[in-house]
Image (cartoon, rainbow, N blue to C red; front, side, top):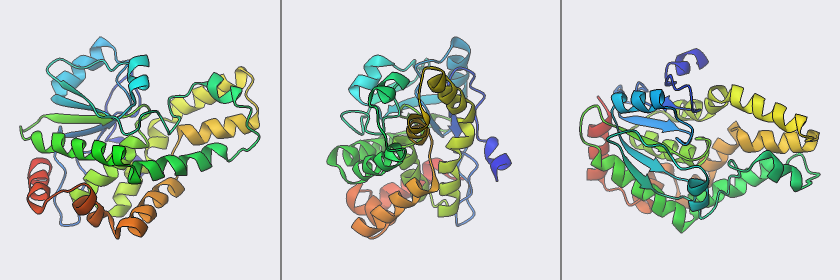
Length: 266
């Protein structure tokens, strides 16, 4: 399946985890349109060639799930003709994906599972907090506005894996993509960012990080089945099902769901 998923990677040289969600097949045999939905990491480091690629690709909307501090530290570079939308899921980066090596090393943690366990708290907030729910509803409003053929919405956070991952779970569920496929897309972040994470950990080790710190950093920079399963189980436990969450918490009407499927499926 990994080889099949690699076709979703965009040829972006100055950013990471840029992926096309077009091409996924739904449970009823339809397919997500190409040039409509892109999940990525931040756009702060994009060079001119990659900005031009995204412009020519049809990017019309940017949805930035990062906090105010994250945005100020690394503002997006926005392709020409695209509209930028600041849509913070948290007031700060609770995933710690934007924390630098020095920040983590300075914490002097002696629990090698600290990063892993921290992520469950972050995901809990992404699902249950009023701020996160408001953010994801605004995301759906932008998706609903994207009615023009061949025009894409980019949605992203810092690493494009957690806040972005939850957003992807929600929209792919709306479009009727099987849960197994949604999980494979979520976990594909580890393939898409493998080189980045390897270099990040090598740099941390060279700067004095011990094995515990390296484990914490690894868990903050990657995804795993346990995180995905926790999202689904938490939604099911608290709201009955992901469909119920979409209707009752995201306040998506049947007409809006039909419109999203018309916008993004063929």
